[in-house]
Amino acid sequence: MIEVDSLTRNYGTTPAVDNVSFRIGANEVVGLLGHNGAGKTTIMRMLSGFLEPSAGSIIIAGANMATQARAVQRQLGYLPEHLPVYPEMPVADYLEYAATLKGIAAADRHLALREAIAATDLGARALDPINRLSRGLRQRVGVAQAILGQPRLLILDEPTNGLDPEQTAQMRELLRRLSARATVILSTHIMQEVEAVCDRVLVLAAGRLVLDQPLQALRQSRTLKLRAGLEEPALESWLKRLPQIASVNSEDGATDERTWLLQLHAKADIDTAANNIAKCVIGAGVCLYELQPVRRDLDSIFRGATKGRATQGGTVA
Image (cartoon, rainbow, N blue to C red; front, side, top):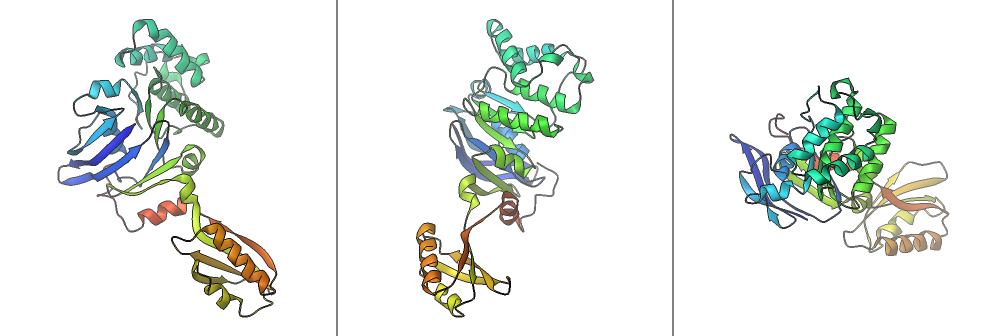
């Protein structure tokens, strides 16, 4: 669906995006993460055709953004962080205007508006001027304009900005439904948002792509937590001899037990390792209380990927 090769964008002498490449398949929901100034917004603007890259290429659904921008833009919906709206216009009129700009045929426009308004639950406010809406409702208007015409690609910058918890839950459900027919790129600072709806994570730091992995793989650490009794003092030395274990670190526990963090070798099979560890503990006559993978949260993964990588001046996004 999306092929990005060596994408670069400079602001003067400052590289906001520096030689970034990635591929995104059809119907993937991808979280784009990074500190302020990491290059997220610049990438989204280039993907939408709003900005031209200084170097590199963008292919979306087989069309080259450099030479077929209009064809690409007809297939995408874009919600920028600060959506330009006409505050005096009623919601329905604004959405009709947005549909016209998108090139949706007049015969199809009414149905497109109805679908977008229903999907974002704006039916009761469709005739209200935008300037009378709360921040959360205005955000939903922005999402409605992005999904007009059932685009194949959705680029959403902070889509839950200003939404209350119930509205956020509704937005998550909407994104899950949209992913059945569209590829979604979601930029947000809220890690729970990414964990709730995304299949994959791209992390940017100082304009460079520092992490690109499926979310499920990121959650699976190479560390097992073992909690066992103290019946055999030599247990730790026996654990260190197992071929799958790279290191053993003990933690303080209760007086009659101890906890170890067992780091596996990169190519070790986690199930084989767990089986061998359990056999080692039980064979030593030690009580086995707990043996499970250490689950990593996205926040700690993000901090680890971006640690020591400063943004380019902290002013460009």
